[in-house]
Structures are given as structure tokens and as C-alpha cells.
Length: 115
Length: 216
Image 1 (cartoon, helix red, strand yellow):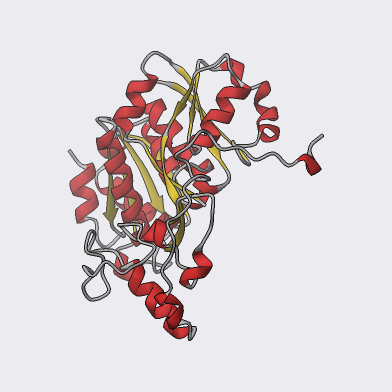
Image 2 (cartoon, each protein chain N blue to C red):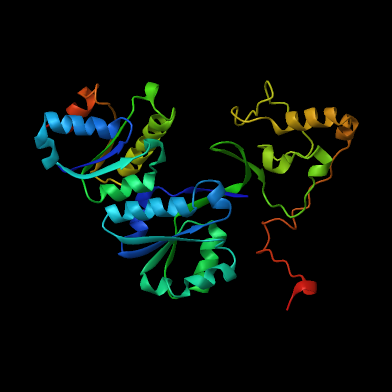
């Protein structure tokens, strides 16, 4: 299963780099990585376009309570829920998830990325 | 404005099944405001169609219901086998008339003429009856907003200001009463309204307006 990742520059992307140092084999599965200033700016179309090139897409961002831009992770969660519903409705077997992580909190990301 | 809703994807996919190269065309007017068929939604649907194996592209025009705005599509449309229009029924038909050689499929269900009440909430306000009488009811249309279309209301079935037929909706006659009271015009509600003239409504033949003064 190929994996794409959109990570916010504040938490998600640094968390991915930290996990990559711990578990270098994760890079074999990851086919796309997009660092973005904030997950709040990632719209549904962008998610769907990246899904063309991978089976699963993770949006990795700040834990909502400590989001650098206050609402970025919350907005991302809403959009991910909407895209998931669209994928299900169209019977497209691809998945998208929100994962909240930072370099000191890798558990959730590890669970999704490390096989 | 005209309020619409995207058709279920299953229905869209079924109607597109004979085609592969598809243009998803948004409209920049009403359906953009009701977040159903604007440029953003067209790009989204095109991306979904690509995931389903279609060679889909998205585009949008200012208003699909006016021929002038469709002229720039003359070069683009022949490259596709079908157009999925995310405009209201008027836009879909105008597009079909301007490009009779290409199948135009509706991607939206046109729901009603209404207004946005809050983010993500739209409510019907007008049925286009052809003879507006809202001034007699404090600016609230009982034809569109009363479940029983009563001109001499209320029906007596409303409870706590809510409609008897749809308790999640306001009773139009309660709203009319409150508005007329606030305007100091309550006594006007004692006037028996004559039967409505449905001649200019949509129950006759297709309606048409011709303005000789502005024709060329």
C-alpha cells in the first residue's frame, strides 16, 4: 500500500522526519510528501489529486489543542471527513486520515506509517 | 437565488458510464453561493472522476444560463465526449441548446429559489408564482412558506410557532402575524383574501417574457 503524506511545517513534517530517523524503512512506502504551512489550507481537491498517486493519504498536523494556527487541524479533520465520505459514496477504495503528531508525540503517526 | 444539491455520485457515475472524456462545468452564479456547483465543486468532482478512471477536466463559466458566457467554451467542448454540468436546470438546458452536438448531463438537482439563513443552511422563499403578493403579508410569502399555501391563515394546527406539517419549520402564519403586529397592521389580516390567480404561475404552458422596448 503506497502512502502519501501532507505534513504541516510546524509539527507534522518535523514529526515525519523524526520518525524517518527512527524507522528509515518507512520511506519505502511513502511515495509523496508535501510540507505545507498549515493543514487548514489543504482543500478537498488537493487531497483527491494526491490520492491519484497513492492508496492512502495522511494529513499530519499539530494536535488540535496546540495547533499553531488555532483552527488548522480542526479544519483538516472536517475536510478529511468530507473526502472520506465522497470516496465511500463513489466506491473508491482509497483512504485518507488525519494524524496529529509532533517530534515529541509520534505514537499515532507510527501506528499509521510503520507496518 | 437558485439553490441546488449535487446528485448522488452513483447517479452521476451511471449517467457518465458510456463516456470517458468528460468536462465538469461549474457555474459562477447561484450554485456557487450554495456551494453545490461552483468552480471549487467542479474541480472536486473532476478529481473524483479521475480517481474512477475518467479523463475528466474541470472548468467554470460566469453564468451557464446566458449564452454569451458560453462562447469561450466553443474551442474547449469538442475535445470531450460529454459535459457534466453543475449548473441549475436552466444552465444545463442553455448549454445543451448552445452545444447540441454534445451530451450535457445534469450533475445537480435544482431544489428551489431560496436564501441562505446561516453557513450551510438555505431555505425556500419563492415559488415563482408570477404574481407577487407578499406586501399583503408583511413581506412573508404564505404561498412558498406555508405548507398548505394558505392565503387566509393560520390553519390552526401550528404549535409553539412551528408548522403542523413539518415541525422543524417555522409556521409562516405565525411569522406573518408577528411581522404585521410589529408593523402595526394587524387589522389588515381580517381582510379575506380572494382566491389567488394561478394563471401566471407555472401550471400553464411554459412562461415567457418579451420586452419589445429592449429587443434588437
